[in-house]
Image (cartoon, rainbow, N blue to C red; front, side, top):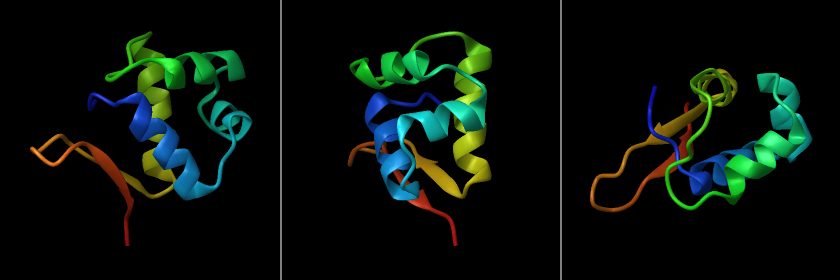
Amino acid sequence: MKELTSDQIRAARAMLRWNQSDLADRCGVSVPTVKRLEAMEGVVEGNRVTLQAVERAFTDAGIEFISEDGGGAGVRLKK
């Protein structure tokens, strides 16, 4: 599991044109949980199962998370 940032979660949602409810439905968590994760600064912290579900929902939808490499962490859509 990668360390995801709140910025990456918001960016991935935007790329997929998902609202917070869409993400919550796809990973089996509540909308307040998504809001809490997105409101954090930097790397999100929380229940490991929840964070894995969020990452899996995005990767299943074609999102690739880019690690910090000096240029900043990010996201992109896989081809």
